Length: 107
Image (cartoon, rainbow, N blue to C red):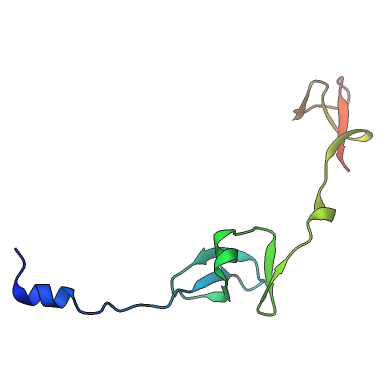
């Protein structure tokens, strides 16, 4: 059962805190985590859209969020004449060059 004092206290205006979004990062600018809490450490304020769609290909440079160009960093394993000798039917098994093998390399 609620007392009269508890009833009137419940109707008092609640404290409304401002909503903020932060990206915490290390000394080199690599992202650590996103948060809405005031925690110790290096951070930058970000918008809600960035907070809701976090990317891993980002860095903090000079206090600003920078998206890295990953189009040139994409590589693919392809069979080559020179490379890592693997089992002819399973690229995940590295074998001695003296055994039957298929060589793979990043291109």
